[in-house]
Length: 568
Image (cartoon, rainbow, N blue to C red; front, top):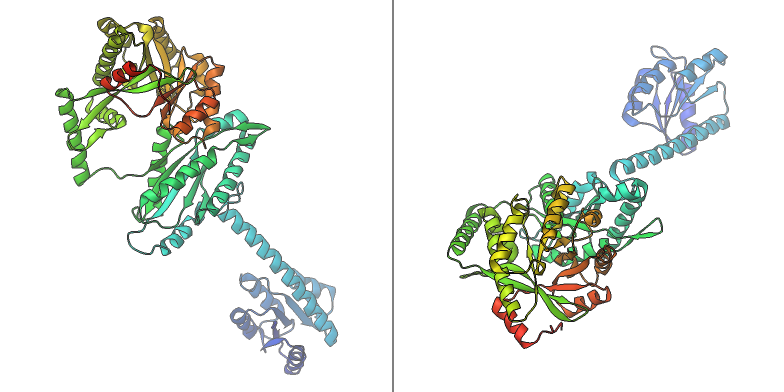
């Protein structure tokens, strides 16, 4: 019901107005003077005010001046009732903010018409104001580019997710997803096209979320998005979801009529392992940085720095690694390299193997991590190179002609005497330089400050007859555009990309085509199954490198049994 405040000092007029308004189903308030009228207006906030101009103490002009100063009453429709009809009087009232004037005597119809007009306009203004407020709220809480909520909504979403935890052990997964090398994409295709890609990413995330009961998708800054999933009982439950999410983003984007393949990285943290939203974002940001540093197109879960028992275990493992190194307990292992066209074993990639007394086989990646922390990575690589060269030279004496690939860590590649080290090992082991293939990682190239100096160093190795391959390459690698400027023979597609086949097929195909266009050999690393092999054959990849590693005795047995390698 519409509430009307009548401020009129003459009782008979006031009562007549109240009777008329009540007969038309208006709710009424009455004040006999301006002071009471102001008090009622502030307390009751009427929809319309009818006010006499000429009153003792506070007149109508004083009343409207006071009410227009207060935000709560500043916009209430205000109609003056007066016996004065001079133009100057009307102008003064309108200048003070009156919405209309009724000159006494006026008819009931004139009053009702004035009320109806003021209320209609007031409602229209209110509706417009609500629309503006909604627009402002949208601007404040939603991202204009993607239409997704922005970071201001994260606190509320986290509270909703927390409310769904059914016990103290359940965890709320908080993910930050970012596009790999997106700043470079913007530089190449332009920011307008880059914005279209971000919009498409937002749409893909929304579609993805429909299948996983996703609680929140939020646009952060730049190319990053935050996602909140329903609580889980074990953090491993999120792994399959993130694998599928990476594949969704890796599907080609159509930009300016062309197909563009991008990868993404994901960092994961869990609430309440992180105590609040700020800590949650910091942990997820740390994790996504680790994912990008490892080459992109992968997911990392935040792990707290090791303390207490875990730190003791890690320190003990490092000590045991030292002992294994000193006591010559480390072995050389070989990952088979197969020519897909010939279906033949054509080479091996040498890695370090360590069978721990009770932990079993330690992964090559962990061994490299331990060797780096122990300051042994250069010595370990020199040892690996010499031992592998000796073994391959022996096989060649038995008429088993295999190529040998050895990965050089960044620390050894940076050594000023690298050429001398390699030459001495080749002479000592009597291995033909053309048999050896040295690998440097894509990260080594990305970290170099002088590409020309790096190219010269590679050329020195090439002049010895040694082959050079770039390893751990994926579509997120920042060195892709530099490959044609370097004296290299081949590229090795990283195991993460291969592990996602066949869903990741467009990415792998693109990298194979890059290699072929540059007249280089394309080698797929970490191949595990027949499905991957079939796909790589279709994409005309030159070689594959099996994930499983063999001992020297196992390789020799394989060679003696059959020079053809059974791919299935």
